Image (cartoon, rainbow, N blue to C red; front, side, top):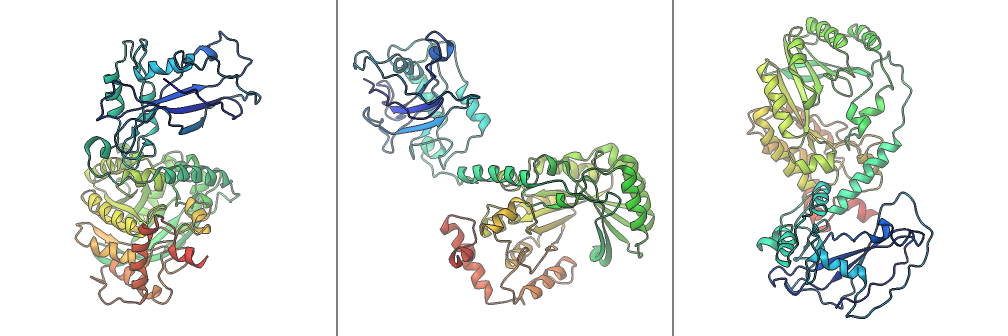
Length: 537
């Protein structure tokens, strides 16, 4: 009934998966086949050891495109490596004995138990489906994207009672992709599994590249004055960047586009930040608005101690009408905010939401906090009298130009109820980041300035104040166009952010046609890489 399994030439332990014939009791509409897994153990293991006697695990089922069962003589194989702490010497596995169809090998007989075939025992095995719409496993099917936790739960679902063919069919069918189960068109899933694996590998590579740098912890990073809006009028804003130990998330994993960790010190004592404050206060020139940045989180007690935070707010609150600080949404606590409101007249909390799409946050930005945490922090800030600024990204990595525009517009409308200001930040290439690595390989291009213009035009209906200050705008590592119109478009975006311009109708350049073609070409090429860079290579 079952053809013999070929020997494996892999070293150490390996797992051979054979797509065998479907059970005779399987109904035609499910067309679920059997995935047989056989584990090879070293010859040194004793015949009665658990490693030799343990039954194989069934992790999948299969079907054909036309809905029929896979024939018994099908020889499609998939080979996976089993994680093992030690590798045994490469030895030739023992040949199968007794290949008679009437007396199949013991391991093939055990595989019957996994499918509930006639004569099966009392064991039941969890099944992870192979989609019938594409005969691929659920983790590569375009219509489904299970998480590792879901895959583990499928493999470990067991029952003490016997398993019938119908129950096995229902178990496998319940994990089929939407197109297979309902006949509907498959939903577009972002990102593709290959992009997912690539993103996680890139994140680890970039994290390994980061090395501690030697900085004087008593020196602040930078300070300057820029234009911003205060009480509906254009005013001077004083920007201060203190040197701290940096964002804890950057040390643990890090966002794909953030390179601020490059400017932080290894360890900064509270008295070091106090010395930075003493020096920078001498540079105050009467600006009514101050922005306090720490390359991390102002309300993280490990980064900025409560005593230092109180002194910063008190000193700046006495000199400025409004103070703006940044933090991650999940770090904001009621007691911290209540204490901070005592020392300032107006306080604005800037929260980096980046996107409201969980897949974009998880796989493109590498963040695990989304709109839910943002809404909680915004509600707390509004309750205590503070305002909220929401940061949203334009074109995180792995998104095409058109996908980035649509994601930013949708995120702006979804974050509007929780925000007083929505700031769209075009991604710029910062050193030692995933974006930097992709950029150097020609696989990422910063957003076009025309994309920023479209996002601002399509979010003019928001109740919150909409703004954008492109970092490195007009440069090759920042949002840019053809080079001829960059300065003019950047100035128009700044005027729009300050309320000095209502639209961008007077802007035009021949590169707009190139930008439109660019947006159309990327989906056609099935990549988020720069089409122009590919053609020039």
